[in-house]
Image 1 (tube, rainbow, N blue to C red):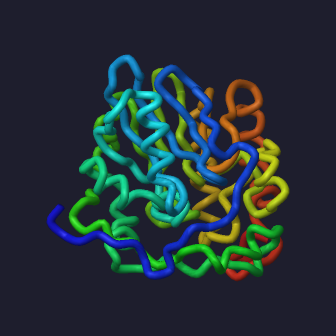
Image 2 (cartoon, rainbow, N blue to C red):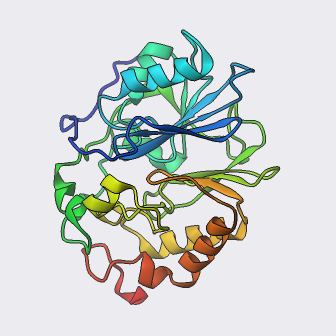
Length: 285
């Protein structure tokens, strides 16, 4: 490691949880979705092959849990070929530095996320005034400063391929974050959506805690471009995924996923876009 990595000075444990915390769901033989407090990480790779990738790295101070889940699935001392980040918000990079130090593996992200991952730029402040519930109101306490991975983070290849994830392509799905990506595999139409859309109303503490399943747009308190978010959802729906895992909420598949995504596209302004908030673009109303 050539350069000292560090989290932002506002990095801290966030005391929120859900009934799904600590639970892993094998969505496909080579796709495990595991919930860390209120956010999902994904292990992509067949346990028999021992080669895998970690997508996103959970909440602050969750490295030990992620290492434990990884070793339970792939064996003692196993480590991924790489870490892929859908974006750099605190609940997706929470353990990344600890994991890079432990595993000594590369991290990949979209080029537009690199400034947030190399200490150069903070995301816009979370919006506690946005229409929503308790989680939105709590959002000012969420870490917002950029982390610094130094030269341990690399740009994803421009051709859409994903390192060490054969068959998957990355798709630029901005709106929630400038360089947000989703991952899609054509052969079985599996989608790792990140926060482009989620399957729980992430702004509401009760719904987060109970993990009540319903399709929703990206978490409102951190989404700054609703027009781009809408275009991203349209792009993902057009892929006709048969199974989707998201950054928040339970996996969704089959007819429920198809009809839910179609509904989200058709009613995006009503379902996803908040009635008020400092990042709400009035043209969408």
